[in-house]
Amino acid sequence: MEANSVKLTLTDPPYGEVTRRSNGIRKLDKSTADEQTFDLNDFLNEVYRVTEGTIIIFCGMNQFSTIREFFAKKQAAKEGTVRQLIWKKTNPSPMNGQHIYLSGIENAVWFKKRGGTFNARCKNTAFEYPCGRSKIHPTEKNHKLLAELILDNSNPGDLVFDPCAGSGSHLLVARDNGRDFIGVELDEGYFKIAEGRLSGAISA
Image 1 (tube, rainbow, N blue to C red):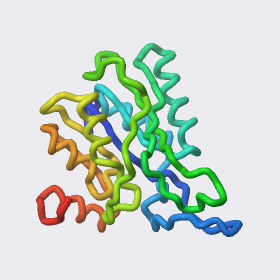
Image 2 (image 1 turned 45 degrees about the horizontal axis):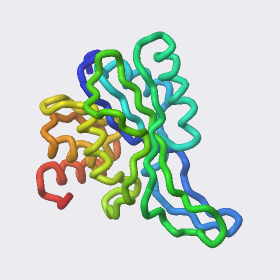
Image 3 (image 1 turned 45 degrees about the vertical axis):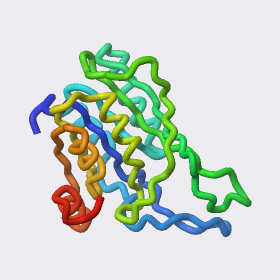
Image 4 (image 1 turned 30 degrees about the horizontal axis):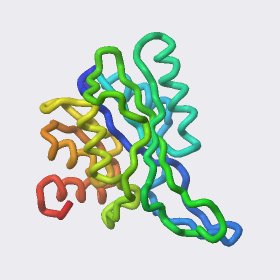
C-alpha cells in the first residue's frame, strides 16, 4: 500500500491474551482469534505510514502502553494528537462476578495526524454501548460504536482501512455509512465470512 493512502484506519488486532483456566476462575475461550502473530512495532509503523488522517486501535492492557507510547512520540514531534478512548460496556458479562469486579471496559488508542478529519465537537473520550451478541467472531465490537467512530473521524467517500479485519464488521459498518473500505485478514475462515457478510450471503 502507498503511504498516506487511507483516511482512517480503524482496527481491532488480536490482544495476545489467550485465555486459560487458573485459580478456579472461568475465562472465555476465543480460540485463535486473540493470538497475536506479528510484531506490534512493525505493525504500528506500517499503519502510520499508510494512514493520512486518523488511526484508532482497540487494544489489550498489555498492548496499551506500547501503542500509546508510539503515538505519544509522534505527538511530541508535533505530527498529531493522541488520546485514550474507552468503551464502557453497559452490559458487561457477569462471569465470575461473585468473585471479582466485572470486566466492563476496553481501551483504544486514537491518533489524529495534523489535518485529519474530526467531525465531533466537545465529545468525551468514553463511549457507552452494550456488548454485541455476535456469534460470528468472539471479539466483535458493537456496530453502533464502530459507526460513531467512523462518522466522527471520516467523511462520506473516504477510504477506511482495517488490517485485522476478522469477520469484516468494521468494513461492513464503513460501507453502510457511505465509506470505501479495504480489509486484510490472514485467517481463511474469517476472510470467507467477511466476504459473505459484505456480499449479503451471510447475515450481518
